[in-house]
Length: 271
Ligand SMILES: C[S@@+](CC[C@H](N)C(=O)[O-])C[C@H]1O[C@@H](n2cnc3c(N)ncnc32)[C@H](O)[C@@H]1O
Image (cartoon, rainbow, N blue to C red; front, top):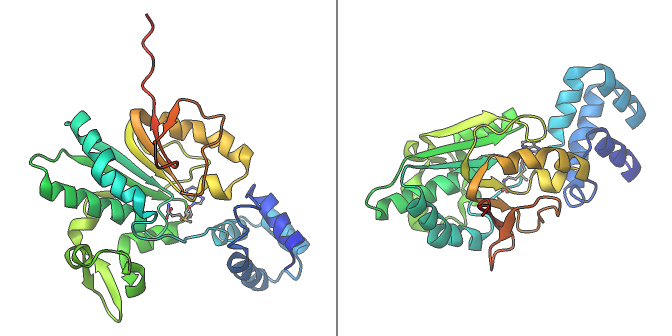
């Protein structure tokens, strides 16, 4: 498949050429295999097939998803969440917190947050209740996330004592998240570009390395306001370290050090 063919496919799903630049090869391989399975010898034939065959179209779209993630991805973020963001949210909201991992892939982000939460719970006298959603558009990714089994290499950056507390061996060189970590996570198939947020008044939303990277501007412009709206005033929005919040989104202030952590401003009181 040449780059023109790949661009036609990106166009078909309103996906960003820049976002797919580094992951193109792997995605392309999966699509070529699918083209063979549905006996389409050219991109033209494939696109025509996607037009008339809903199953093939859904499969093609899911094959374009990118599941790359890591536990505690972007280390400084997790330190800031632990030392600054969560302590201040906990102090401000003793009634409980509502958190959303949007585009959670194979679960590493959701379990990272759950590990952090349980670690803080061990040091905090009265930890309030947590409502925690982890959503992704790809049902196969969610199944794996719920299963919570990871190869040893995936846990390389999880500190040894944290790993010993939250993971158990599960077969050859694999580890499984303990029940304590999995309890209470509300896994849900959810399309950020179509569906309404799973709840309202979130105190913290992770929107990292998904919509802002992989979709065209017009898709982001249409979908981002509802996501931003689901954040409570004073709530935090985390995006990917290399992502930028589009200029059209008003009412968010960046963290003084972490350019990818934003706080939603409280509405101004009129005098
Ligand atoms: C590269 S992973 C990022 C995982 C994690 N947020 C992180 O930063 O490590 C991108 C995830 O976004 C999901 N995704 C892509 N489009 C989506 C959409 N429209 N709605 C919800 N999730 C989507 C993909 O299925 C994939 O699991």
